[in-house]
Length: 307
Image (cartoon, rainbow, N blue to C red):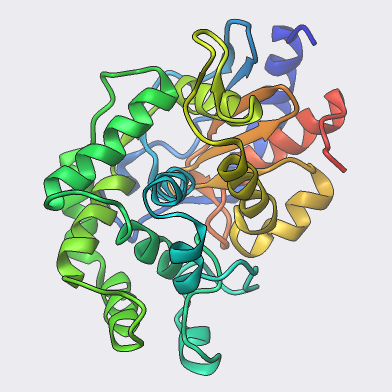
């Protein structure tokens, strides 16, 4: 497929009207400073140059999109059995920061790695000598997948998240009480908050998605960056859980694996291409409202659904 820039621009214009239906995340104070009317997209086909449209240049923090890559790294470090002994494989139908099922469903482990409890647990499996080493390994992994070694994290967003993350702390200590989370809770949270504060762009996300679309292989070097089996697991979680409790609707309407973050970013993996979107205005479920519209229209226009 040859990506048509004019189609991307047309779909941006159509979808941008939906920005005013959402609100920028404010529970992390630093995120509330971003304009809510931004909307941009980059499409990166395997073996081709990326194509961008709209306002896709600003850097933004990756937030929950990081969950895909910490899952992949944890699987590479520990293997499937150790990870999935502590984290389930099922959608929840609950909000991403819900603690309800930890209390009411035995054995009290997170349902999947795409909700906060699952992601915090997954982060605890990342190998390293100390907190800094563990985070540096996550950052280095994302730099390799994105092909951008200048990527770093936003200190202000990290501090803002760390100072206001009362609910995530409650979730983590409940996981500790349930004997799911092992080790020092505050150290795991430090790594988790920092990984969410890594700054990327639509172009970065699109390349990361392209690597996943190519089953973990970098087409430029033919290097297998991620085992194919683990890429399959990650894409399955993206289609079933990646858009929180809107995942089923998105799977029906767009039909492509995707993972959202509360900064308004969305990483999507379509056949033979990766797609990165930024649209900071969110719906009440925590997903970019215009971004979802844009991806749905793009999938329909190009017949991208995997179903």
